[in-house]
Length: 197
Image 1 (cartoon, rainbow, N blue to C red):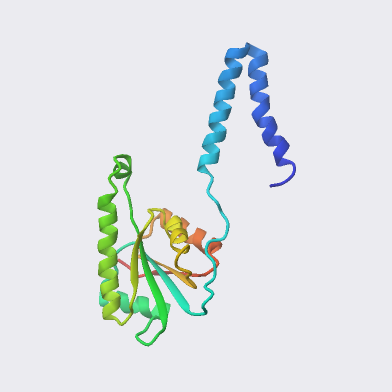
Image 2: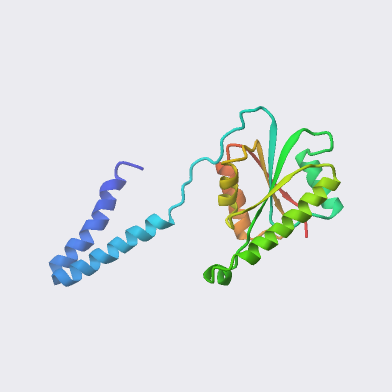
């Protein structure tokens, strides 16, 4: 943080409170103080750490994290993915397929996340089975609904050397934003593959 920002932040906190006390007395002063406290808590709660994600693998072998947003089961799409990532039958690589659980607003509000997790699990089963047919052995995990958070969580236990975000060609703004953030923050290599719908 630049040195001049701290006094500016302190003034932005103190001046409205003092002005409220000075202009209308304790009632308005306490009301303004409560609003300022709420604003500080709201801003702090919305902050997301923006440091680098992941630590490099220390064993010298290749670890690939495939992040899928839908099932990849068509043989042509699986072969295209395997070729693009360099995963062939003879390749020595540890592969983990991650599917973020896409939770809708109402499901989140009603704490009904099971259907979203089940859908992500179905995507994983279909994708891992299709990869196995193509000669690629992979593990599978369901992750957080936020793609960046899901990747960050998995990199705590799976030291990926490469992270591949697999899209379907109809990626929304959230997927593009996630890809941009992953590209800028990952310590591991990052690539994005669009397989088409």
